[in-house]
Length: 279
Ligand SMILES: NC(=O)C1=CN([C@@H]2O[C@H](COP(=O)(O)OP(=O)(O)OC[C@H]3O[C@@H](n4cnc5c(N)ncnc54)[C@H](OP(=O)(O)O)[C@@H]3O)[C@@H](O)[C@H]2O)C=CC1
Ligand SMILES: O=C(O)[C@@H]1CCC=N1
Image 1: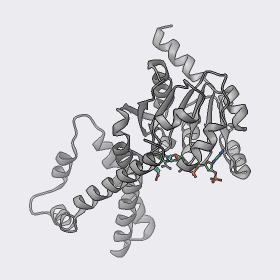
Image 2 (image 1 turned 180 degrees about the vertical axis):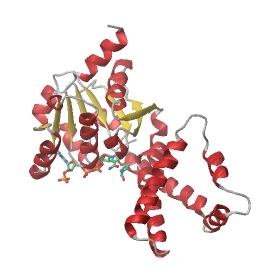
Image 3 (image 1 turned 120 degrees about the vertical axis):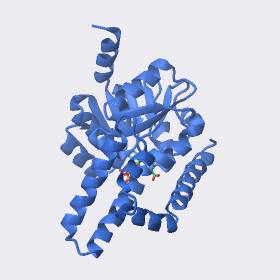
Image 4 (image 1 turned 90 degrees about the vertical axis):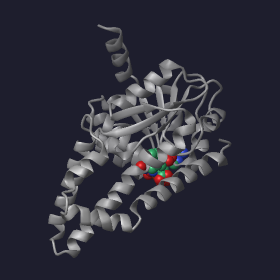
């Protein structure tokens, strides 16, 4: 067995506990199960008992409490809302070596470390919901006590649900504004296109199928080797043709400026959340 294979094997046998079984917590657990991870090695801590039963029933993972999860887990994933993070981390007992992976928007590692037992390795991550279908973009930054092994552990876990990139923590707010919140922008565009098609008289199921297949196909082209959005757009835009007219109208409505402002507002909100906690 190679060293890399040994490391991967060790990672897949880690016990992983997700604190917060909401949308992103379930997306991670669902993605891990879909990637073939043994559900027996996955724990969820969710304060809403009905929701806990729902997630554990759907995915086969074990619902438990923070003390039990913290005692058993090699990796503790924080997936509660930013305002709930301090409370949940301050209830994590000292005494077991574990990596803490925080998915919470805006909360800086310096605050996470303050709330955890001294010396805990912390990795701050901005994920996104496509992790449910194994196509996440997860952006990672190391805390003060997270060495290469801790980063490898976090990255090994998240690579089973998509792609990973490491950035300095100073870039996390901007990353949140692109990949963390980005799926919502694209879903809004898809919704708008469907409604536009319905307004042209297409039956809703037909409009929905045309748009979802187009978004999926365009995504496949975008992630192909050597492709760039400008070149792909030019290839669709025939001289004197139909697409040029649509693009002219979108530009006249300020599409680029709208995206620039939206992404900036998102970055600012992430920064403001961080500032609340001393980031
Ligand atoms: N949704 C997304 O696309 C993304 C989310 N994130 C981050 O992920 C985190 C979670 O977001 P999201 O999943 O959308 O939020 P949700 O509200 O859907 O999920 C959080 C869950 O955690 C539960 N919870 C809160 N406190 C505790 C506690 N002390 N113990 C156990 N369970 C608890 C909540 O219960 P209750 O409902 O009772 O509060 C809720 O069910 C946030 O910090 C967010 O910034 C990051 C990237 C993308
Ligand atoms: O909207 C939010 O705050 C979270 C973080 C990134 C995506 N969803």
